[in-house]
Length: 208
Image 1 (spheres, rainbow, N blue to C red):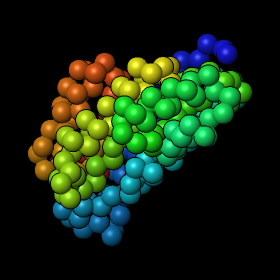
Image 2: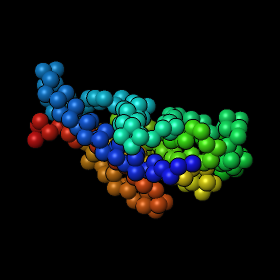
Image 3: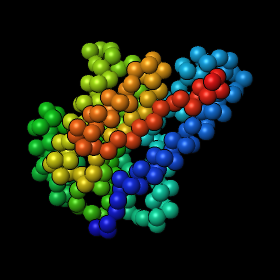
């Protein structure tokens, strides 16, 4: 398998995605439809949920692949790591250990794989796109982040993926003056996991 730094490609794609997001929401905030800062704050342009985040982000990742003339690499979204789904992969026996460690078959938000290789994944990532309070139904934002990080740590330790990343897009907590980014930074540092983060402050720049 060729030497591919999927993490570096993802970092570059994230930077381009964030720049594009900021540019678009600045324009959307100038629409005649948007009449106040409070209205702009409550709008969730471009990203309505985590699936949207992965789809939008994916566009820029594939652009990075093209720029670097890389082929045979694909991005997969919302994949369950079931033993029966990965026949022929060298890490397949470890999927049983993964299920045992986590108490269930985990679903991964993002997998980057070399399609013509039976080796471990190039990268796995979990994403959180906060557009409302996670503090509901006995869930908390901190708990959700820790759950995702445990999944990533286990995948990494079982050598199912070469690299793992946590992605945070915050369109709620920073508005409420809660430092969700610092919480994620601290948790990722503790687990030695790369964090890609951004928020939606650009949509309020019109009202500075």
